[in-house]
Length: 267
Image 1 (tube, rainbow, N blue to C red):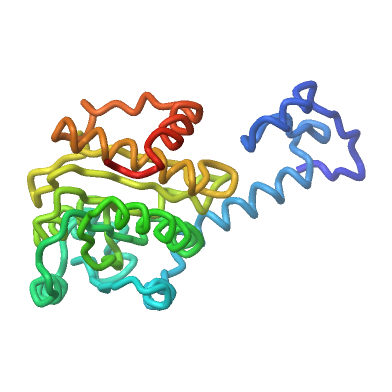
Image 2 (image 1 turned 60 degrees about the vertical axis):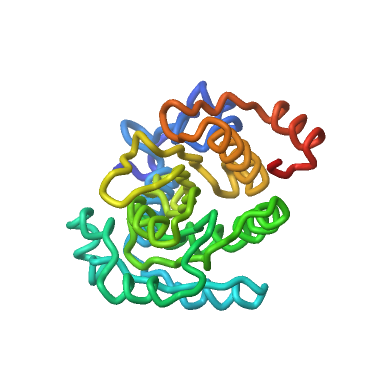
């Protein structure tokens, strides 16, 4: 790598476009190489992405914060016993361990309209930063609309499909799972929401789900994500399905108009 002190640094003509995207464009060069700053920024971003995957999430801390706000929680575990197994065996992350199933069966009541599941996924940082504030926006809206809520289920080493078994246990029509997304070099803390109508363990597939992605400080805001989710919930209740056949064709303007007309609640 050329040293910036010994080579002329050439600015990229696309430099002005950097203001519109966090993508690595217009990095410039020093001689035939990237500048030292660009190389160091890349190494930092790569390290943050690796940390997001490998640093364990303290679900107990998340549970305590939600309980302090008056929400019931339930801590569960998938069949992936550790992080290494979780990364190598995605199938085990989709299944609850036997003790988790027992814990579910012992909770009362066993019927609910909505179950919200939080799983670490591939970014513990995303859940640590974004799950609690989004849930505290979403739950009051669901409660005001008359939905019966199951305890918020926090699943260690969980994949998206782990929510199906939980929804089935509660006979819940609506399954909402918040999960850390695979980190990118510009967004190691991105969270996604997966929504499934009438989720069934071993039957529901990715085609049956709707995804709201890219929730982080430089992406989709909590308010935007909740509005999109409420829109999808209302549409799913009317059509009795979710997934690829349920299209989210909303825009921010349309969602704002819906909020004004309906009081931002599902009716």
